[in-house]
Image (cartoon, rainbow, N blue to C red; front, side):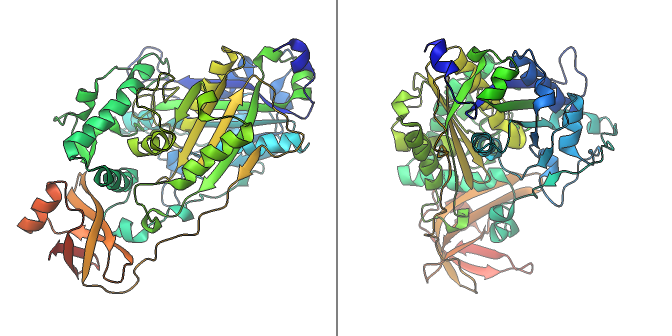
Length: 515
């Protein structure tokens, strides 16, 4: 691509001009026990420096969106060490920026990728000149300091106004599943994973090895990533074998194959118009074009016709490729969100990609090995994608970002090749599917199991199942593991299709026993 081609890019064309990451580890030299805001500030400073601008990027920022940290992502959860009264303002302050618009985003791992599309559209429409997306997690530090009885004060009085977009968790609510012990990501994804296992006719051991085979190449990428939380190469067999250290957290998952949230990581992305980039003196070889961003919302897990599938995520990727005018074969770099195996499996099943695709399926090392930096993981993937295409001019990278329990998905396509935003149609929010399975609302006395997991928590093991009642409505409950035939059916890994007789216990929970 010639310099003349780049220089002819319209002033309102959105480009990524800078990306930055920052991380620290509690057991390595130089550890500072940085707060969320300090980590985010370091990442944003790195992104500004990465732009190579001769002018002041910080002064040009008119929009700054702060991705919610996990400990700020639920109404019932408060940061244990406190937080600023204006989170985006606190981050902006650390780089000397004074954006007109400050935003605290909603919850979800798709958020940062979706915001790239939203802010690119705003730049193309002349509504923004320079926007920042930045987030951080400090869960590792919080746990380490709490274990020692230390409680630093991370609160700050920043003042000023900002947009609080709310938690955005309404579409993630699964009250019936929550009431039966499927209260977090691990058991909810495990329910979907076991549904896929049943569809493929795999035993638990066979399927665990499939997960290990998928993730073995991820560990190699993580081992070479300076920001990875667990930079250790592991074999498929090591990942799949159940040991005291690699225990089952929820069937079929071993501990090593689930997202690692104990990290101290931050990442930032700077999007600007080409005209401003020129004015700031950003070298044109730093520009990365945003060829497409699409966002989609899935049905709630309990309402999905196929409990193993997430068609909204497929639709998002397909739409992004179509808007970019490319196919999957044109993507030289891929990062599929990998909090668990099932979101990756859904993509490679659909597109016919092998687990050992020579391009690789991750740019970071994936959430179990690079680290699951809360709602901000995909900002790290975007950072890696930007650096990859900068170093491989004319190539294309695709980043798939997942939120909730495969509840939301956003996809981005990046390249140094110019993207024409004159029609303003490179960002799209897809319509939500409307083919929900009816949920059972009243009492029922029997159910047929569609999927299940046994969740191993500190308080004990709980078997959770999803199935259909006699009317064909979707229902859920617990299996009575004190009943020997029921326990044997569930612990065998093959309770699919069995009929349960159900009763309600004193807490109103549905308890199933083999009929």
